[in-house]
Image (cartoon, rainbow, N blue to C red; front, top):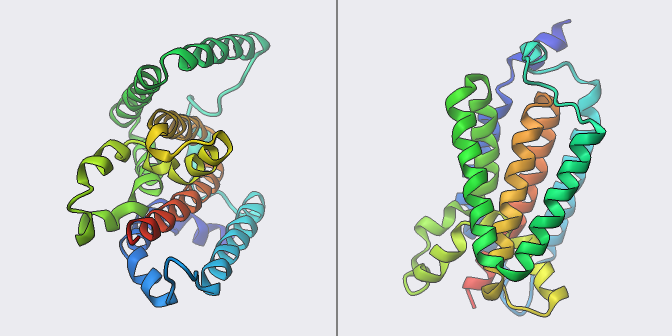
Length: 239
């Protein structure tokens, strides 16, 4: 009982917001501390990456056995969401149509999807007070790992390009890998980074309605991906 009460008092979502901001702000300092350069990455980078991956995995695996940090969430009539066969069929048809449209008009469709998802974000923040903090934590895990950009002096000549990338920054790491498989540079995949970011955000909004444990786990994985992308971007702008 004492452990359960302690878990419920831990401000998980404010901690996620603070951690995202602190980590994002000190990405350049961490890069300098490792002694890395463009031709010789430090072994510490791989060790830290493995350490974060293992830590997040172990914490997420332990979450089902931990007391719920927010027991009142169970009384929320909007959660959890249940799927029927009809819902799945409709969703599959919508995805198929969306993919076909993206193939013809990638930037326009991706931008439209991104805008729709953000309307969902705003609607969630305005309508559901109990979802505001989890949603803020999700947004922080997506964007705050790139906080160092605001103070990076070497980006004065790249601000226009970065402004165009900003909407898809949370998916920067994933888009880089996709670009390699597709044989394209990141600059030509703005539509993909925008679409992936919208997808990550949309899934996160759905996860928030499923309960605090799943939300915390999802936010941690989102944070891990964003931190990886932020570190890679910081290394690239030093070239």
